[in-house]
Image (tube, rainbow, N blue to C red; front, side, top):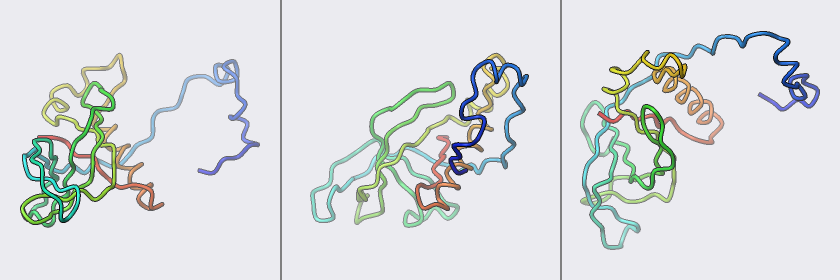
Length: 160
């Protein structure tokens, strides 16, 4: 969506919004794509020829074949924020390298959500109007829009 300085909503006051009545229903998104992921320990190389360090904080997105070459991996860093159904962590993209993983230099924010908790708690937060399935769908939609603009990628990985 382009910025339009003539859009009347840009200068809308609280009174203008209140006069227009209740907000419309949220957008509908496609059902989310859910990928299996797991935490694992492995060697991580900062440089191709450097010494490895062992890390327990590697998040792996598994593909259907189980082939490590086709997997996406991330070294999880600090927690950036917490939410009802998960947390957002700083992550460093990894690619398969020798007996471990090599840091690519790309950083990403990844929201880690426990899928079992989501299923158990879905619909229990009516007062908060939270729906974790819609949230995942929305994040994937925004990631795909960014991917098309070559800005970001889809990285919604429920932790099983």
